[in-house]
Image (cartoon, rainbow, N blue to C red; front, top):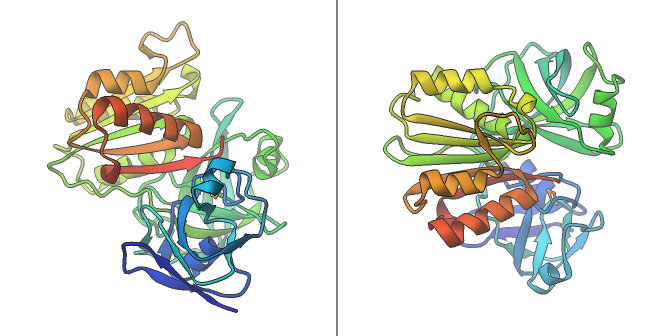
Length: 333
Ligand code: FES
């Protein structure tokens, strides 16, 4: 039996067919939701159920007892049992519809023991069509999928770059990092998805706070702005936190952007490298000191779910972070 899903305080609604999760139904109907692991583990899709009932296709590991008492659900694995009204921050209708296609791995470059860059090419010869900041899903033979942000500019090319962190016990990244999945292999994929896109007007300040491979969608956004000749004069600050200096794969590209575009400020922050001559420790502290007041900024956060939550709380309390001008892309960890 199908059920109607209404996003509260919006004109977005769609229908879930029998057995479909909320996220599957949304994607089929061209509605973008904030998602991370898509398997109930990271909490990125946690949302309030205003009315109705759901069951789960997988155990909702990311929901605490407190969450359940507050009526929170996981959009990635919740299956409607009745018509629903849900709160879903950042939900919007897609500008680009998702398609399934095969991709060939054309290049893998290990950045460090934990991170690699992978270039993929569409086997059908078509061009990748996505908005900067969006993700591609790699479809696994067991029916699961893994989402990775495009790091390349959104300018319709037949190849695209992904920037991938090794997840311990990760099914796909395990095979990738041990060399079982390698250059020349064909993967099934579906794209584009995701709501972490850049919508800040040119006269407004934007601050990016990202950790680790959370830099990938930001690279896509900055490269797209540069390619479209839209970076000049934009007041953008980027704080990128990594553990070790060797993880700063895009350091020279970002430093060169900061030199060419003086309104773009780049702050690499390293937490576990005593010899790093620049900023050390956590990005939150440096962002609070350098930016100070966030009330007039659009703030973009990308990193693990705990990082996104803790940065949001810290800056909300101390620096006037505006909830309705904060955009996040959280992934498991
Ligand atoms: S828990 Fe739903 S996307 Fe991770």
